[in-house]
Structure formats: C-alpha cells, structure tokens
Image (cartoon, rainbow, N blue to C red; front, side):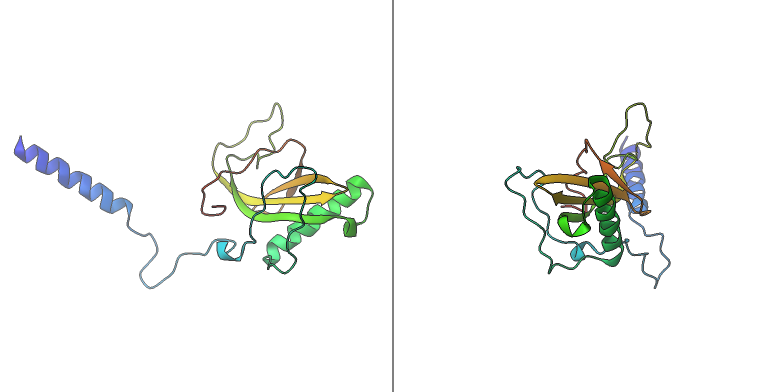
Length: 158
C-alpha cells in the first residue's frame, strides 16, 4: 500500500511538472501578445448613464492597430448616423477576451465556437447615445445593438 501511495505521488508530481514546462526553446522568448496590456488605456465604467458620458482622455496612448479599428468604427457610425466623424467621441478602447466566437455580439439562430476569443471593445458616443463596436484580433469590427460584456478578470481587462 505504501509503495502504491509513493508511486501515485510521483506520478502526480511528474504530471504537474510536465504541465509547467515551456515549449519555447532555451534562449528564445515566446511570441508577444498582439498588444502590450500596459499600453492599453484606462477603462471607463462599462455602462454609463445617459448624462454620465465622458470622452476618453486624448492624451492616453492607443496602440496603432487599435487606433485603426477606432477609425473604422467611427467611420461606420458616421455613415450609419449620417454625421461627421468629428461629432463622435471615443469613450473606451480596450483589449478584452470575449466568451465565445460571437465577440459579444451573438445573432439569433447562429452558432459560435465556444472558446475564449481575444479581441477589442470600442465604445463611442454621439448625440448623448453610446454605441459599442467589437472586434477580434483579425481586425474586422462589428457594431453591436445588444452587446454582451467581455470576460472580466482576464489578463487583457483586469
């Protein structure tokens, strides 16, 4: 019985050690994530009331690939609303993790991959109304009429 317990403990320790080894060859660093989380702007509250809309501080640095998505979202909103992009304020632009392949914009009757999906959340304001755009790391943005929130507590949006 004692030998059985010792063998079991050894197997468990080997399994745990095997799970923590790196697949990156010695001397090489792993590929960095698409964005450095320290470069992401400070988040605003996720659902401000109509009178509590505050544009994001323009002095905050937005990574170049996220800036392109913000511009796409502003252009789309300007076209949808028949207004100029100068009438649109950025409330939030952040790197997040979506709970599935719908990127927080599930459509009725559609099926989505049930995997955590890294992406972006862009919140815009115009005329006192808030608009959400979601994107995956591939760069396609989606306007969300009925958005669902990203996963909280992930490395991207803690």
